[in-house]
Image (cartoon, rainbow, N blue to C red):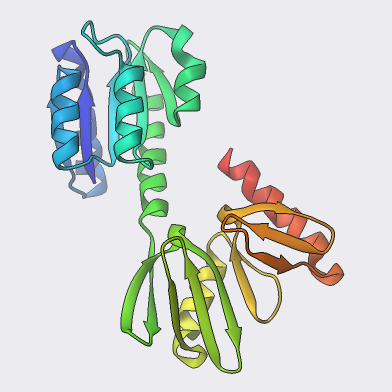
Length: 237
């Protein structure tokens, strides 16, 4: 994971960096950590090599506030993970709208810091989780958060993702199908496995996906679908 820390106070930049290093030692892991005391410098480097997680102070005492920086970063990388570090709670609502994982107060409580760092790593793993599919183009690793749904028919399959479709033989993806069901996917029937993330809405007898595809929702599965879908929504919130 690539991590950036940006605060106009060098003490907090170094303090957060050291806390992350100590966490890495305990978990036997390693990440790239870059330190900044200037928001514009962070933006300049982010354009060249985007970060996965950004610890960001709100009051940077410069042209851009932390909120401004976060908005610009979101335009470059929508799934960047944010943790705001500040003592100014009036920014809380806007930071939540931007997708900040948490407001951490100064001075920093270590127990809370570790809890949120663990959460950030968990989110990162979810965003970058991949499954190997045997397709007509060969073996391809595909991120689960890019998959809308898997449809099978007459021994063949079609995998719809955010960007394109993949095709192949059903027998070649037995393991991949099970992996989907272990994550936030749900079997509508024997032929369809959908990603809850891309369900736009559901009605009495059908589901509308984010790409406008309409999929059948039968009476037999309706109750289970609603229960598991709302459980998924609760966890995401």
